[in-house]
Length: 210
Image (cartoon, rainbow, N blue to C red; front, side, top):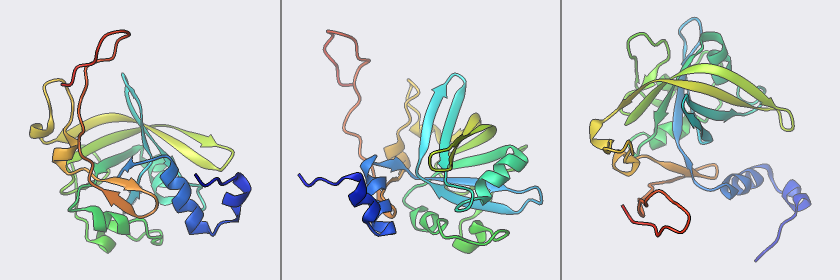
């Protein structure tokens, strides 16, 4: 196997390094975060670093890049306290990728990419029409990661919209059937395939395939 040390990695061209390091942590979900500012100007951005933080209370976090590099999403969340998380499927993937372009403040990625916004009653944040799973989020807190000036944004799950055909009796969601997309590196998109589900693991008890 080929070995690279930290000095090797630092010497690489910017996008080569970013691609390589992003791939190291494996496949990640492709999600679109919808926000608006206090003037109701819409913003949409693709994120691949969502993390499950707990089920009771239901919390989801994501990593936001340094403010200088990506400010619109986090500023809107701070201003309004609301945002949406929208799962990307194969029909949305190309337009979703385009939202990673650095549009100027005040420009709507919905308009620029052709993604159609939609709204649910009582929620100011825009959602993505055609997304198979839509989540209304309430801002909880932001923790700054001092080492690289990024932010962990924590939100509470307020409401969820999901096609009932995706929901199993035990709460499992069939994301493969939903057409959910996974990402790898800066620009790779994949369709995950279920290998299997297994019984709850206990010491010395053989696993059963569900």
